[in-house]
Amino acid sequence: MRTELVTTLKRQATELLADIERDRQPILITQHGLPSAYLIDVESFQRMQRRMAVLEGVARGEQAVAEGRTSTQAQAMKRLSRWLK
Image (tube, rainbow, N blue to C red; front, side):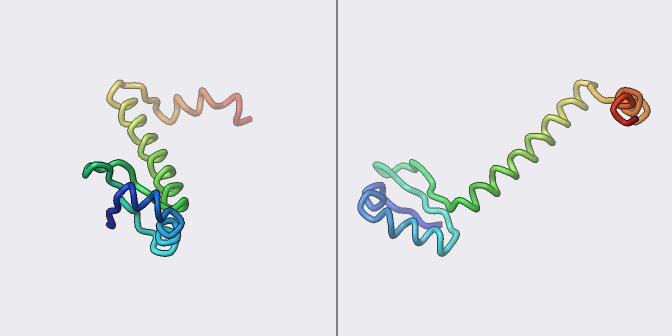
């Protein structure tokens, strides 16, 4: 991964954006020597958001199992029967 200074971002934003779109590699922006932000292409960001949504659903499911908030298939079918007619 490439690292650039915030001043480089200020001066060469167009070029950095073109590099990101072409290479699909994130760029770490540093400010005062410390990590400040990542620049990533839109497609990669959207893919990350979708993956996070799936992982959050898995985590909610695991929490429900741990708390005993689960149903058998028969119980679920009985509850949903009014919509399945």
